[in-house]
Length: 442
Image 1: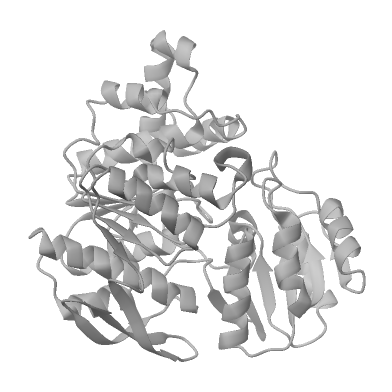
Image 2: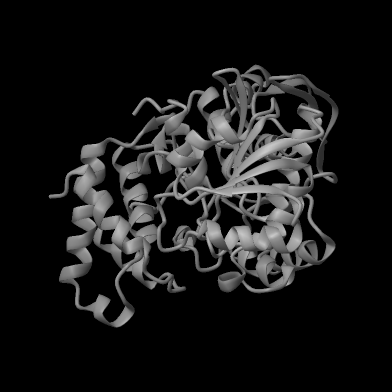
């Protein structure tokens, strides 16, 4: 058997392997585990921006309605166990280690994997999550895709109760395609026959692709801004209030801790999911429980504000252009600062230049760094420096070799009172949280 840390070491080696599209490997593993994903009440979420927040909102709304809810998300910030939880409690370390070992034994003893290839880290984790949720007899599973949708390991499910697609934009182009239509086609792969779809506002070319797929699957679509919307948005320093309106409901004075206008959108998607479950007579919607579920929702590293040692830190793992645009709007809305300082590190499969062009105009000084995690995928700070010098030669920039050094240097290099934005990758944000002494209760 593996201990938890032996399992992490094993998974870390698998993370470096190239992703192979297809569902054959996870299907084979799940068959050996007696198909724990079968006959479950599953809400399946895909998208480029906001799927993690939307998943959390949905989970908390169900928890507030007194259900036992399994939540599967990625990536994590400070512990792998964050990816798999039940009613906000992370998966037990002992179970995690033992199940990783069991799955390893399954594919090592099965000759069929010689033909189809060994499973990826994400396929192992997804199988583990299904087994855990089955063993713990959860009432609902809220399931976030890793990337894409059509060939994502989570798409092994055949009968979700509801599917959700959040905002789609450019990301993972090396896998999903170079156009919005191609990316939308992959994301639309989660739409299932005669299962309702909740859809955020989209560009027309994205909307056309998704609606075509939904029509082929006889899936009823509920579109943000058409079938439900938000209004009367009121922004305060630590909370945003709004009204939700649909054909059957009008909920006033809803408050969320997750800051940013895009979180109002994400929360509206989650409310629509609960409305659908109510219409299907699966739950009894309660407005007070809606308010509580939204109010209780929080995700570290998404518009997270930390005040420490006389400084204001903004922690957000924005790693694509659309996320960075939302983050920039968030900073301008909630802080109204003309300038900020930034600690930045990003993985090499991202649109690095596009991301930097969005945020750098409002940045005074930059510290470039690289996370210890994902060493095979990180971008060297020297490469980032070259990109910045080519596009913004006037910027004051220094390089650090790791997050610890960036934290130390920030106290000297940032000699003004501007907020410090830590961004570019969830790996960067997670490691930086450690140096701020902010931890989950594991």
